[in-house]
Length: 245
Image (tube, rainbow, N blue to C red; front, top):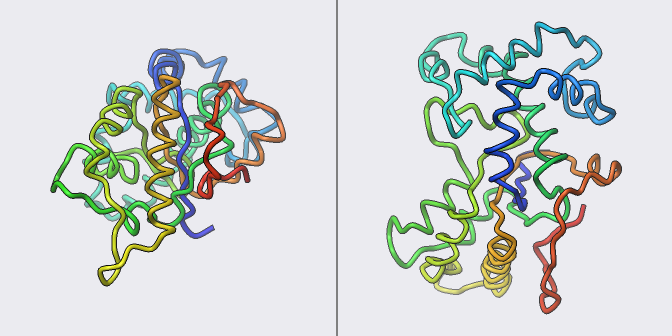
């Protein structure tokens, strides 16, 4: 797909309190998703599921950071010749794929999503205050800059914000400006910035966080009708950047 990025409403509290512990303690839940109808679209060779594959995921998850973003082994190996093979190993790919499948089945909204496209946040946004809280949090949407970061793989979850972080971003959004080109701001970029703020407002009003993803076909979730969160969208916006497919 060539780096198509998307931003989704996300129940980070349920993720933190229910999903993350399940990866460390609930082999039955992981197995049920490994064997689900959606698994073949996301998980490598699910037909070869073994107890060892599930155990490997749980063992790796047990060593991850409390926020479930990082693992110290990745930082240890990052300068080694075999790092790419390790980072894209079956064990790590299983964890990423299972996490994505469970998150978007249980605590995130697949469709509609806000369009991040290919680096649109970088291309479209400027900041009136250097190194502001808003800029830091928007960068967090785009990247996990930690050397020990588990995400992203080739596709799937990139990073996320908690509901509290969304509110902080919204509270500091006055420093976010449309980025001009040769001194002129394209009206489409004005629209993008105003719609991003509106999307943040929807998340904040529902006490939700945000999760960003890369190169995923979300139609697989639409087909199974897995929506877990009811959202009230404002009717006064044309939403050029809120996509349903």
